[in-house]
Image (cartoon, rainbow, N blue to C red; front, side, top):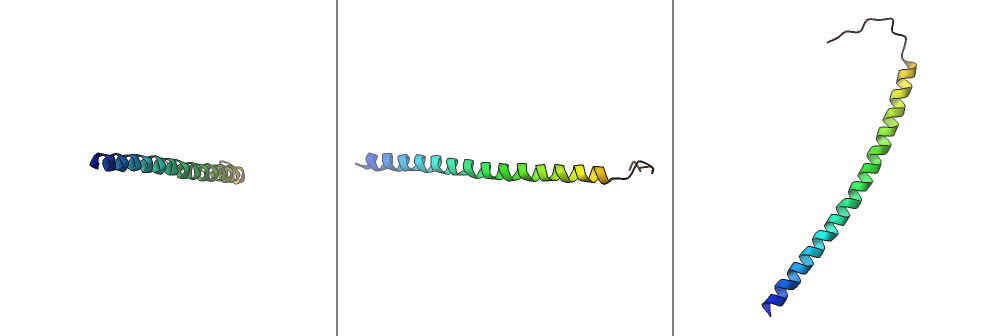
Length: 63
């Protein structure tokens, strides 16, 4: 009889681990989408800054 309870405990423990893994995977996908959107916005901002930059008339320091 006790073996049945241990068996059920292990079954539900395994199911909870699977559910947690799937949830974490979903959250990771949402974060990855946000990072991709932020990188795209940053690339657009860098491109605009490069277009507005003055000509290379000044010397740059090499610190």
